[in-house]
Image 1 (cartoon, one colour):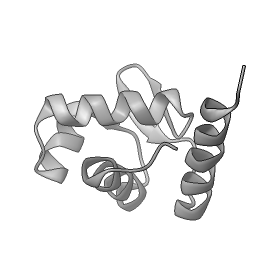
Image 2 (tube, rainbow, N blue to C red):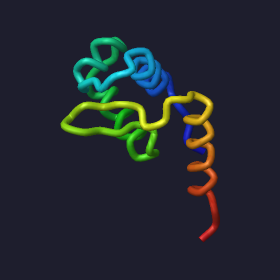
Image 3 (tube, rainbow, N blue to C red):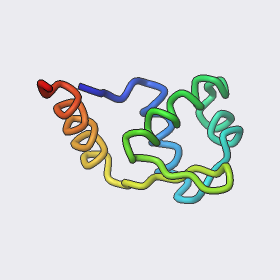
Image 4 (tube, helix red, strand yellow):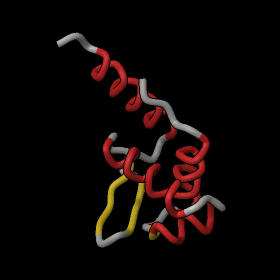
Length: 83
């Protein structure tokens, strides 16, 4: 099952707190994490449809933290289904 790690949680919290689109560098500055770690987190969140991006700016596609965790749990269940 996919889970949020500490960097993912910081990225989500930052996007929730700001309530607007942010660049990778802005998110990195606000979280105190390296751009590389933030990029990996954003990619994971984007692939799980939690973050959306347009013109190199990121925003939450899902704003409720419980909904985010439910989405990741559902995604994890799909990944573990037998083929």
